[in-house]
Image (cartoon, rainbow, N blue to C red):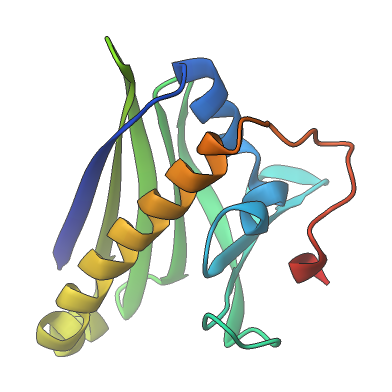
Length: 156
């Protein structure tokens, strides 16, 4: 098992960052390579889709589950096959004098994680930093996209 994390100070109120992080159906609006989609029949289930930046079609799409939801500070999900290879990804938010401290954590576990430890860990660390930067740029635009607005064309 291995874990990587990245922390960033976002110049936005905690409630605003929280709304973006937990609105899984809008992840593609700001996340560079992951799309999440909620299951209307089961609020703990989601569909996790990974895109390679610049590609039109996703590389993989799998069912996952929300494993942590503590308002307004923690949100995490898990995808994979228990014991073989699982990815757990999540956010921890804290109010800070200058905005919100966001810590993103990604853990890989199972037999497959040992194989990818040396190759994947540096990639995962860069991916977290890129994701946090993308979220920061999205917040800087000064708008919070409404759940009812038209979706970003990358969704389709």
